[in-house]
Image (cartoon, rainbow, N blue to C red; front, side, top):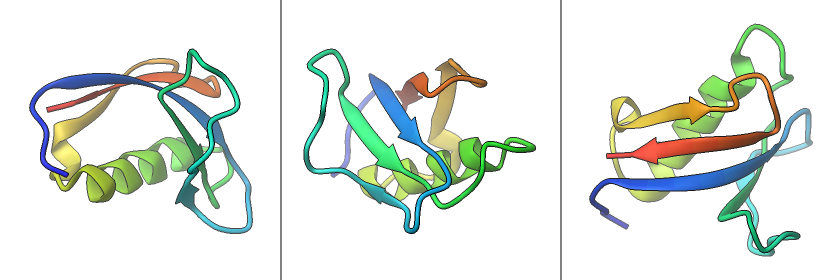
Length: 80
């Protein structure tokens, strides 16, 4: 799925059994929910989130950046 500049609101669930982008979203104000295997330690979960979203949207990892929410579970992510 190739896109032009887009900003999405992501809810992250770290320390799960597998990494995946969820089909069902629990809240209306969230665009994407993501399960991550990585623990929220040393920025590992954020790195995994960026890789997973880059693969999903078919863009390089450098095109995905966390605009806000680096230390929280709710993040605003920009995809270029």
